[in-house]
Length: 185
Image 1: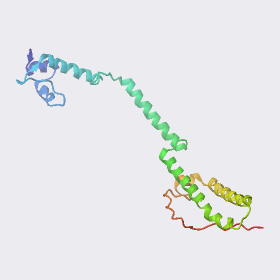
Image 2: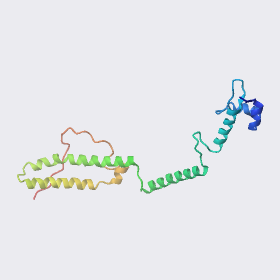
Image 3: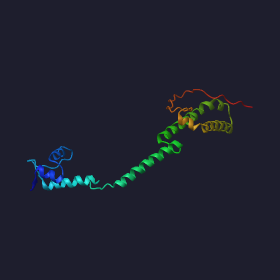
Image 4: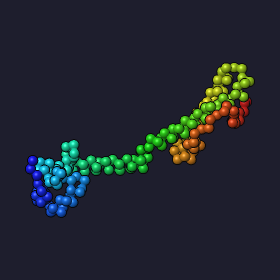
Protein backbone atom coordinates (compact mmCIF):
# COMPACT_ATOMS: atom_id res chain seq x y z
CA UNK A 1 0.00 0.00 0.00
CA UNK A 2 1.48 3.32 -1.09
CA UNK A 3 1.33 6.29 1.26
CA UNK A 4 1.97 10.00 1.02
CA UNK A 5 3.66 12.15 3.61
CA UNK A 6 2.24 15.53 4.63
CA UNK A 7 4.34 17.48 2.10
CA UNK A 8 3.25 15.26 -0.83
CA UNK A 9 -0.42 15.36 0.20
CA UNK A 10 -0.27 19.16 0.52
CA UNK A 11 1.27 19.45 -2.94
CA UNK A 12 -1.46 17.29 -4.47
CA UNK A 13 -4.10 19.51 -2.87
CA UNK A 14 -2.24 22.66 -3.86
CA UNK A 15 -2.03 23.95 -0.30
CA UNK A 16 0.70 24.44 2.26
CA UNK A 17 1.44 21.77 4.85
CA UNK A 18 0.12 24.15 7.48
CA UNK A 19 -3.21 24.38 5.63
CA UNK A 20 -3.30 20.58 5.26
CA UNK A 21 -3.00 20.26 9.04
CA UNK A 22 -5.84 22.77 9.44
CA UNK A 23 -7.97 20.74 7.02
CA UNK A 24 -7.18 17.63 9.07
CA UNK A 25 -8.93 19.30 12.06
CA UNK A 26 -12.14 20.08 10.10
CA UNK A 27 -15.32 17.98 10.06
CA UNK A 28 -14.23 15.89 7.04
CA UNK A 29 -10.48 15.32 7.49
CA UNK A 30 -8.34 13.43 4.97
CA UNK A 31 -7.73 9.79 5.93
CA UNK A 32 -4.47 9.01 7.76
CA UNK A 33 -2.92 5.79 8.88
CA UNK A 34 -1.51 5.19 12.36
CA UNK A 35 1.89 6.56 11.30
CA UNK A 36 0.36 9.88 10.22
CA UNK A 37 0.75 9.11 6.50
CA UNK A 38 -1.94 9.45 3.87
CA UNK A 39 -2.87 6.19 2.05
CA UNK A 40 -2.97 7.01 -1.69
CA UNK A 41 -6.22 5.25 -2.57
CA UNK A 42 -8.22 6.62 0.41
CA UNK A 43 -6.67 10.09 -0.01
CA UNK A 44 -7.64 10.11 -3.70
CA UNK A 45 -11.20 9.05 -2.84
CA UNK A 46 -11.39 11.77 -0.19
CA UNK A 47 -10.33 14.38 -2.79
CA UNK A 48 -12.96 13.11 -5.29
CA UNK A 49 -15.69 13.24 -2.64
CA UNK A 50 -14.76 16.82 -1.67
CA UNK A 51 -14.78 17.83 -5.31
CA UNK A 52 -18.18 16.17 -5.88
CA UNK A 53 -19.64 18.04 -2.90
CA UNK A 54 -18.31 21.33 -4.26
CA UNK A 55 -20.11 20.54 -7.56
CA UNK A 56 -23.42 19.97 -5.77
CA UNK A 57 -23.41 16.17 -5.52
CA UNK A 58 -24.99 14.95 -2.30
CA UNK A 59 -23.76 12.00 -0.24
CA UNK A 60 -26.45 9.74 -1.74
CA UNK A 61 -25.20 10.52 -5.25
CA UNK A 62 -27.99 12.92 -6.21
CA UNK A 63 -26.76 15.89 -8.18
CA UNK A 64 -28.18 19.27 -7.19
CA UNK A 65 -28.96 21.54 -10.10
CA UNK A 66 -28.42 25.08 -8.84
CA UNK A 67 -30.79 26.59 -11.41
CA UNK A 68 -33.51 24.07 -10.55
CA UNK A 69 -33.06 24.74 -6.84
CA UNK A 70 -33.29 28.49 -7.43
CA UNK A 71 -36.43 28.00 -9.50
CA UNK A 72 -37.96 25.80 -6.77
CA UNK A 73 -37.16 28.44 -4.14
CA UNK A 74 -38.62 31.21 -6.32
CA UNK A 75 -41.81 29.18 -6.84
CA UNK A 76 -42.19 28.52 -3.10
CA UNK A 77 -41.70 32.22 -2.35
CA UNK A 78 -44.24 33.17 -5.05
CA UNK A 79 -46.75 30.65 -3.68
CA UNK A 80 -46.29 32.00 -0.16
CA UNK A 81 -46.82 35.57 -1.37
CA UNK A 82 -49.90 34.55 -3.39
CA UNK A 83 -51.42 32.81 -0.36
CA UNK A 84 -50.75 35.82 1.84
CA UNK A 85 -52.35 38.14 -0.73
CA UNK A 86 -55.39 35.86 -1.02
CA UNK A 87 -55.70 35.84 2.77
CA UNK A 88 -55.54 39.64 2.90
CA UNK A 89 -58.24 39.88 0.21
CA UNK A 90 -60.44 37.54 2.25
CA UNK A 91 -60.33 34.77 -0.37
CA UNK A 92 -58.40 32.36 1.84
CA UNK A 93 -59.02 31.49 5.47
CA UNK A 94 -57.26 29.31 7.97
CA UNK A 95 -58.83 25.99 8.86
CA UNK A 96 -58.61 26.78 12.57
CA UNK A 97 -60.59 30.02 12.09
CA UNK A 98 -63.32 28.20 10.15
CA UNK A 99 -63.44 25.46 12.76
CA UNK A 100 -63.86 28.04 15.54
CA UNK A 101 -66.56 29.87 13.59
CA UNK A 102 -68.49 26.63 13.01
CA UNK A 103 -68.20 25.76 16.68
CA UNK A 104 -69.70 29.15 17.57
CA UNK A 105 -72.57 28.77 15.11
CA UNK A 106 -73.34 25.22 16.20
CA UNK A 107 -73.17 26.24 19.84
CA UNK A 108 -75.70 29.02 19.22
CA UNK A 109 -77.89 26.58 17.26
CA UNK A 110 -77.73 23.97 20.01
CA UNK A 111 -78.55 26.50 22.74
CA UNK A 112 -81.46 27.88 20.73
CA UNK A 113 -82.97 24.48 19.90
CA UNK A 114 -82.54 23.12 23.44
CA UNK A 115 -84.38 26.13 24.84
CA UNK A 116 -87.50 25.43 22.75
CA UNK A 117 -89.16 22.88 25.06
CA UNK A 118 -88.95 25.27 28.00
CA UNK A 119 -90.48 28.11 26.00
CA UNK A 120 -93.21 26.01 24.43
CA UNK A 121 -94.21 23.82 27.39
CA UNK A 122 -96.56 26.27 29.11
CA UNK A 123 -98.30 27.18 25.86
CA UNK A 124 -98.90 23.57 24.79
CA UNK A 125 -100.54 22.50 28.08
CA UNK A 126 -103.98 23.89 27.27
CA UNK A 127 -104.06 22.83 23.62
CA UNK A 128 -106.31 19.91 22.77
CA UNK A 129 -105.94 19.82 18.97
CA UNK A 130 -102.81 18.15 17.62
CA UNK A 131 -102.70 20.47 14.61
CA UNK A 132 -102.73 23.53 16.85
CA UNK A 133 -99.88 22.13 18.99
CA UNK A 134 -97.95 21.26 15.83
CA UNK A 135 -98.45 24.79 14.47
CA UNK A 136 -97.24 26.29 17.75
CA UNK A 137 -94.10 24.12 17.80
CA UNK A 138 -93.49 24.84 14.13
CA UNK A 139 -93.84 28.58 14.74
CA UNK A 140 -91.26 28.47 17.53
CA UNK A 141 -88.91 26.36 15.41
CA UNK A 142 -89.25 28.84 12.55
CA UNK A 143 -88.48 31.72 14.93
CA UNK A 144 -85.40 29.92 16.23
CA UNK A 145 -84.17 29.12 12.73
CA UNK A 146 -84.81 32.68 11.56
CA UNK A 147 -82.83 34.02 14.51
CA UNK A 148 -79.98 31.69 13.62
CA UNK A 149 -80.09 32.75 9.96
CA UNK A 150 -79.55 36.35 11.07
CA UNK A 151 -76.31 35.58 12.90
CA UNK A 152 -73.64 38.01 11.75
CA UNK A 153 -70.87 35.67 10.64
CA UNK A 154 -68.27 38.42 10.40
CA UNK A 155 -68.92 39.45 14.01
CA UNK A 156 -68.65 35.81 15.09
CA UNK A 157 -65.37 35.48 13.23
CA UNK A 158 -63.97 38.52 14.99
CA UNK A 159 -65.26 37.33 18.36
CA UNK A 160 -67.62 40.26 18.94
CA UNK A 161 -70.86 38.42 18.23
CA UNK A 162 -73.32 36.79 20.58
CA UNK A 163 -71.33 33.57 20.58
CA UNK A 164 -67.99 34.49 22.11
CA UNK A 165 -66.13 31.28 21.26
CA UNK A 166 -66.36 29.91 24.79
CA UNK A 167 -67.75 26.44 25.20
CA UNK A 168 -71.37 26.34 26.23
CA UNK A 169 -71.95 25.59 29.90
CA UNK A 170 -73.32 22.18 30.71
CA UNK A 171 -77.03 22.19 31.37
CA UNK A 172 -78.62 20.94 34.56
CA UNK A 173 -82.10 20.65 33.07
CA UNK A 174 -83.46 23.68 34.90
CA UNK A 175 -85.00 26.48 32.85
CA UNK A 176 -83.03 29.71 32.64
CA UNK A 177 -85.71 31.91 31.18
CA UNK A 178 -88.24 32.06 28.40
CA UNK A 179 -89.63 34.35 25.80
CA UNK A 180 -92.83 36.15 26.47
CA UNK A 181 -95.69 34.36 24.77
CA UNK A 182 -97.33 36.05 21.81
CA UNK A 183 -100.73 37.62 22.35
CA UNK A 184 -103.59 35.48 21.12
CA UNK A 185 -106.49 37.04 19.39
